[in-house]
Image 1 (cartoon, helix red, strand yellow):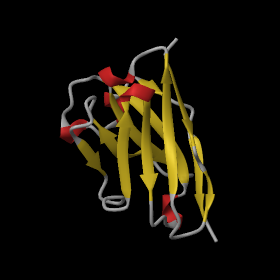
Image 2 (tube, one colour):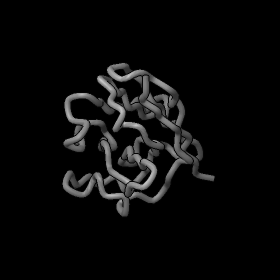
Image 3 (cartoon, rainbow, N blue to C red):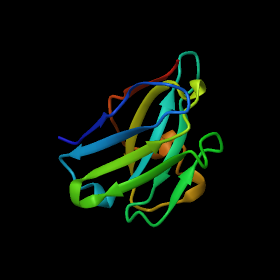
Image 4 (cartoon, one colour):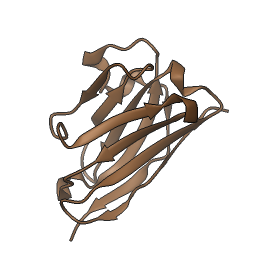
Length: 127
């Protein structure tokens, strides 16, 4: 059974930092492109960041560029999203997703490119 489990969400003050983790089971993550997506109430799901199977390529939405960093540790079968300088508008449920190994940068933040999804973790940025 292929599963992705997000963790690390919670309540953080504006300007604070948080690190999300996406742990895979049932498959080896090193064969997959991984994306992070988020969905706020009343908003469409938004691609946040992605990383190629090897970690050589990354992509970020303009809204998070310079503030968020995606990384992966294939030995631990885990992908991370470090979020800094958090803003209230970052508040959302964050999902990780696994897609094909072949990485196309322009498609890597498109939800339809991904096959497996986690259940999400809530991130709330508020004072």
